[in-house]
Each structure stands twice: as structure tokens, then as C-alpha cells.
Length: 119
Image (cartoon, rainbow, N blue to C red; front, side, top):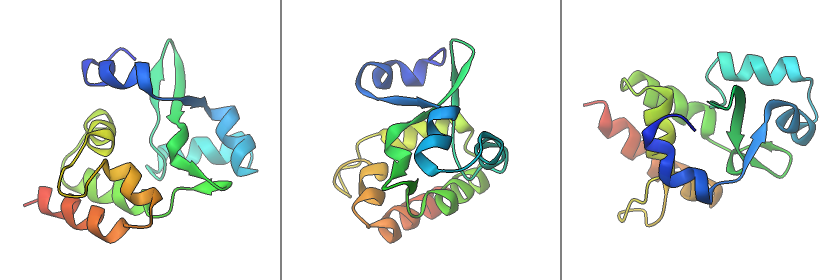
């Protein structure tokens, strides 16, 4: 990743290309690109290729609560990079990372924290 906020994550995260995401979701690549444009799915560019963290796909679907959470973060003024950083940064009040809490079906807690960022 070219952005400094990803330096910690690039070594520890598994990334999917958009065609890989399309395969895992069982949808056309055009639909995945539309999800990224509509900010229902977050992708970052690395070496000229858009990539999505594997954690965003769970059981053949987008991680439950992710699209709504991305909207909340965007409304709070977060850039894509800041949103990605926030999602994967440890939060001792959860505990763990917001993305892990989403995967554990604790989306309400995560959304409440994200909404508090807007104020």
C-alpha cells in the first residue's frame, strides 16, 4: 500500500483483488466495482490494483453491517484510507478491532462508536 496508515496492515492482512471478490460473492466484476463506487465496499489501490481485505467477505457475502458502517464513517468525514485504518485498529473498548466485532455480530457496538466520531 502506498499510504502510510497501511504500513502496519500490509504485513498482516490478506487482500483480494476485485475479480477474487466477485468470485467469492458470486457476482459479476461490474457489480463489485459498483459496490466500491457506491461505498458499500472499501478497496485500496496497491501496485495499481484495487484490493479488498479478505475480512470484508464472510460466508460468500459482504460482512454484515459493513455497507452501513462505511456510510456512517463517510458522513463523519473519514476518507477511504482513514476508514480502513479505523476498521482495523485495535479498540480496547470493544475489545479487538471494529472489523472483528462486525464479524462477531457486534455491529451495533461498532456503529455506535462510529456515530460518536461524527460529533
